[in-house]
Amino acid sequence: MLALLVAAVVSSALWRVPAEASATRATAYADSAFRATNVHRADQGRVQLREAACLTRMAERWARHMARTGRMVHQDLEPIIRRCELSMVGENIAVGYSSGRAVVKRGWMHSEGHRANILRREYRLMGIGAARDSNGRWWASQVFGRS
Image 1 (cartoon, rainbow, N blue to C red):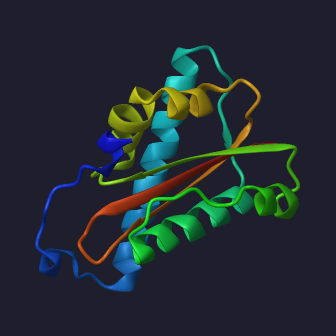
Image 2 (image 1 turned 180 degrees about the horizontal axis):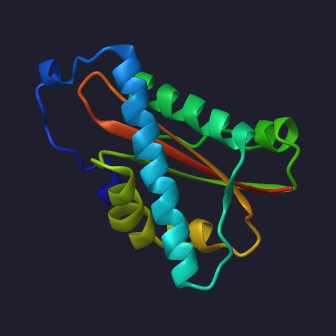
């Protein structure tokens, strides 16, 4: 887990951007992580994951929560099972990676448990959320599911 906590120190003044620009960057971060996840799944002969709007909302909400509180903790997955009408869910979280591709390639794929979530054959759906904290660090939540 320590690798997921490493982050560069950057002046917070560099990261003060309008909310709209920040949301666009968060979407680009999440989209990049989504593509990178499916590349790794394809490399291992797994089916591509489809985006689920409900999972994306849950991941985005959690990434914002972690960025706001400065605490990297997993969310309770039971409400996600109910709200998104799923039979199974899993989650990867991270902080400090500069891009969506980096969080997947250098973070989650180098951690046994996170890698197992990414490559789990049963999963068919995914949502990813990303948010920056006041120091400019990225926080990410990747939620997997199966109907």
